[in-house]
Length: 480
Image 1 (cartoon, one colour):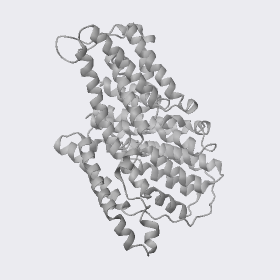
Image 2: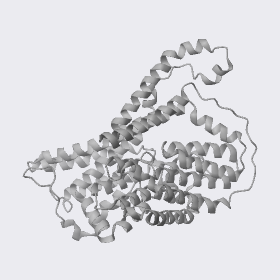
Image 3: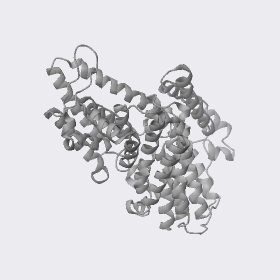
């Protein structure tokens, strides 16, 4: 599940630099005899922009002021829609604003519930020590620095399509730190590789990133078509990794004999997660229902299995109390509780997502996204606009970027929707602050993986970014 934050801010500033576009008329919405008001050149519109800019300024400064990013965007969303509601009520058509905000809330609810189920499964696997066992296995194998560089990168690439890139990156970074020790050069390069791999791996899967999930649920690209991005994603990861490989110290660190046993039920929870994904895809592809219905059904699978674990916990303790297996695999003394896993979801991210959807939706209702769409997709062209979206996502959260593009809903072939999905997903790798994975690793490997350490290799990462776009446009020509 991914944290880059500012493309929509740039979209919002367009009217200041392109006053001619500020006279564009608003499209009708909501039905009835009323049409949507064009407020892009009004004091109300500029006030909403000011609220939006201030909220995102606080989000960008999260690392310095230690204010969780969800707080300013939630307040900003309330203020923007409060302004809109007041204006429309004073014009005698409050139903238009109500219809628009309900539409945004429905979009948010579907995505939030989908992500909540995925986060609950990931937290359950983490509590059952699935990721700890994988980390211990990697360390125990005694790989050399170069082998470990590729192993952690490849695993990050293939785990992130089903687990969020943040969890994947933190897991692989723990391995790197445990083996790399004080070798700053290895830790820096391995962390860069993990960030690139995790972001690239999430780009070809509907479940790999919030942006791909939004594109899938919106119906712009069907489930299986996303896998057309597999080869471009591989190129995005392999090109910079192959170049960085030669800078990795050719050394063999000491192996560890640590063994971590997974708790009871871990493998069955992994199987239930895969079954949940199959259910979500089947509900969408064969029944025409929103994927979130299948995901919530899958949460029911986990709830029933959690009930089984809880009911049999004491019996299993007594049966295995004298065995060695009991000591490592039974789990802690507190029985499995599904709602503890729900409570441990990344609520700050989910609420940040709410603020983003409502803020960007409000600016779109005011008319600013129509202006941005006119500039980017009509004047620049779809290819240039989609490549720019990826570059901007290096300094901006890709959630508002993609939601803004989906709200604009430009007329594009499937190949262009795949392109913007790819660029928004992997563009954040260009800078360490461009993705949730990069920001998290700067904290986890503090002093070893830094902004400037990543920036030094940005030209190499940009080469992979450009190569992946070229490969996509070459091998996926039939989608354009």
